[in-house]
Image (cartoon, rainbow, N blue to C red; front, side, top):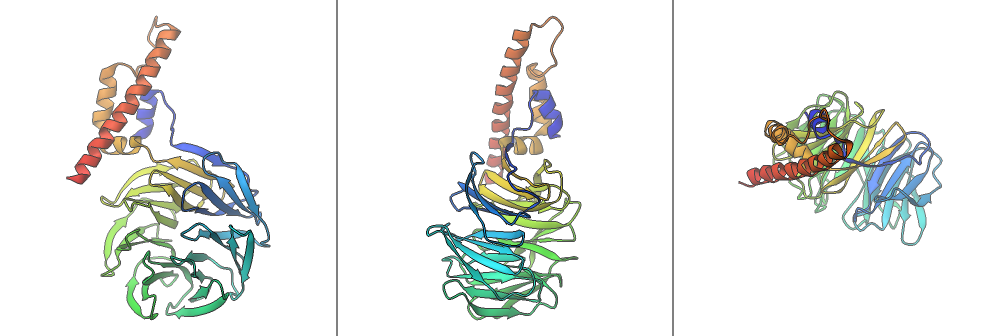
Amino acid sequence: MGIMLQNLAGQADESLLLTFKEHKGPVYSVAVHPDGSTIATGAEDMLIHLWDAGTGEIRKTLEGHRKPVKYLSFSKDGRYLLSAAGTEIRVWDLEIGNSQKYAKHVTHVYNLDFNRDASRFLSTSLKNKFIEWDREEAGVVKTYEKHTRTCLVAAYSPDNTKIASGSLDRTIIIWNAGSGEVIHEISAHGGNIFSIDFSPNGKLLASASMDENIKIWNVETGRIHKLLEGHEYAVVFVRFSPDGRYLVSASYDKTAKLWEIATGNCIYTFIDHKDALYAAEFLSDSKLVTCSNDGTAMIYEITPRFFAEFYFFDELRQEMRESGLFEERRKGEKKEEYQLRQQKAAKLRKELHEKYYRKHLNGMNQ
């Protein structure tokens, strides 16, 4: 649908804002500073680049890992950055400029997550258990053991009262973060679980799986809230937007998808990467970043066009055609006249997208 309207409008897809190409080899991990201004990427080249989300310029490069950097996560205040490379974990103090190593895992670390005040963090590896660490003491606080196969992912709820974990045993366990007791054990997917994320209010949990599906869970009941289908290969990463209205997913099918939580609809599919995606994060409610095996990271803007074309394609196309502005160059039309008409078409196109986006929002609020 979108391509037809783009052609009618004489416009290219404007949602891709920036492509970051400074790594050598696959880009495995991406994390966004809480203020959205800085992006961290980790890659096969064993480097972590901290770069400006607006310009793509590298602000700083963190060196020291001896294996590809597979996972990154900022603390909630942005002072610390967690990184995983091989069996090694590091916490980078971006204010002071140093890093501390955490050694316990014997298989490579897959996933990391800070708690709310960065006093503790979780780590998973290719083992059935996952670990909770004390950041300052660099010691293990607790080991969570319940899964029957490799536990790849674990995350704190926003209020730190719960922890969720996902495993190759195809289950999700929701734990009491204080006592370590199991609250819910959910038979969740038909394949390995690669990623989980709590919604900002902590009421929902998203999970992504080898079975190509995304599921949204009610945290209180442990029951499924929504099933999101559409990817054509394993879904390896999911994240909620800061306002909780959207979810972004990254897949080995070379695409990222934008989902609307209220409806469960896939509003837009991002298709610019040339190889499998590994991660996707929101910079804000209206921007996101992806990273891929193709060696790049890309920043996109979520525009009114996505919603206008998804929900009101026929009405939008009709108005564009009736305007007469979007036709091919007419016989006898001067070049200057055609260029002026193209400018008017671009302006009207934007106005129509905003008009139908507002219509969608009004409908959602009723």
